[in-house]
Structure formats: C-alpha cells, structure tokens
Image 1 (cartoon, rainbow, N blue to C red):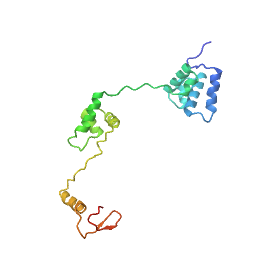
Image 2: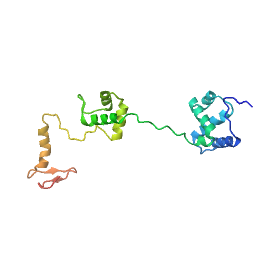
Image 3: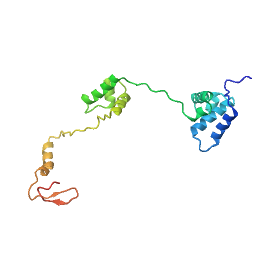
Image 4: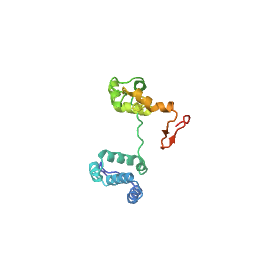
Length: 188
C-alpha cells in the first residue's frame, strides 16, 4: 500500500498514548505539542499545515516527526541531547583580555569597559564580558581609596578626621546616635 510522504506511521498503542497525554491536565505543554504534531502527521497533514495549525515553526515539526519515527513515544518525552559547544576563543585571547584588564588602563578613561576593551583588542564586547565573568573581574568596581582633586581636600580632611585622631580636652563629641562623649581617651 502506498503512503504519502507526509504520513507518519504509528501503532494504535502509540496513538492511544499520545491522545492520553493530550487529554491529561498534568501533562507538560511541550509534550502535548509534540503529541499533537505526531498525531496530525499521522493524519497525512503536511508539515506547513501542521505548523500553521499549531502556531509553531516548520523545523519544530520536522524535528519531532523525525524523533518519533526513530524513537517512538519515548522520544517525545525528553529533549534530544544538544551538541557540546566548542570553545569559542583560545587560551591566548583569554590571557590577553585578563592581562590587559588588570595591567593597563585606557588613555582617556579611568578603567576599561567591555566595549572599550573589545575595541582595543578587536573582539566583541560579549567576548570580553564572558571572560570577565568567568574570571570574576569587575574593573568598574574600584577597591582602592581615591584622593579627591579638590584643592582644599587636605584642609577638609584634617578638619574632619583631625579631632578623631587628636581629641581636644574639654570638647564634646557626638557619636552616631547623638550621645555626647567628652572623654579624650575613649574612641568613638
């Protein structure tokens, strides 16, 4: 007997299982979609018709038809294994990004951004972001104390920190809670 190219052959037990999954309220929606794809393919509908009816893509239809044909009902229960990604960039590039981030600063900026470093090294900013993330680098977070460029900074610093370093006699200091403290030797 001749079958159309669109026909997906299945046993009555398989058809019953797919229909049961569609009816069961606890079935995951992705399995319901896969079941509907296979049942419509079994009814000789074309891939484009199935895709339009189920509001999905033609490659999705092709994937699950092929998966059902090779593995049966069990093949619809789980995602097919995905290919392992190959390393996107080599170790030399990673070392260059890390060293440049840690050892240099841009000429006109205070620190590297992903985009400025990417432009400097001729790579994408996402490559720099991935390397920074994998190495825990955050050059935008400064860990050192920075001095102000204010010309009166030293005088202001002395005015604020001086009394803490060298408390004066008969002077009242208020702590964070507002309580007075007049003892010279007691730290605040």
